[in-house]
Image (cartoon, rainbow, N blue to C red):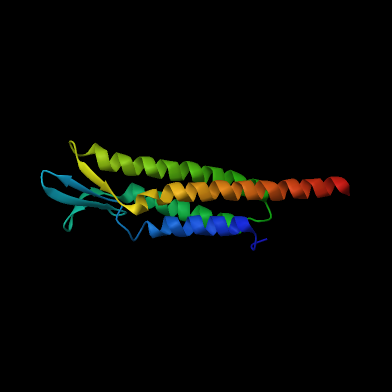
Amino acid sequence: MIQRIQTVYIFMAAVLTALLFGFDFAELVINGELYVFDATGIMQAEEVIFDGLPVMGFIGLIILLHLAVIFMYKNRIRQIRILAFTIILLLGLIGIMFYFLHSGFENPEVVYKIPMTFPLVAAILDYLAIRAIGKDEALVRSLDRIR
């Protein structure tokens, strides 16, 4: 059932995660120099300081899982398991982002941008989708008992 509310939650989470490719996550000021952190890594002007391949990999995997879960509507238990794994990946993405920001520099001044919250919002949307899928599963099981 693609028209269910959990599909809207999952699609919104996928869109939020996909938007991470286009926005800057944070700006760092170190010794008066400005560095920008986005999906491609930490850059100063056009020079890449840290490569963002792990961040891009996580984002790509999360988007693929969201899109795959939308079409698994016949197997609700698998949907719940994959969404739980996706929540773990989203929290891992947040951890990788903070690691990138604070690992390579000594006392950076960090200005976080709004897209830094997108993985957390996507994890909340995934949780709401899991609850809605669980309600559907409970409804189907209760109807099976009646027959």
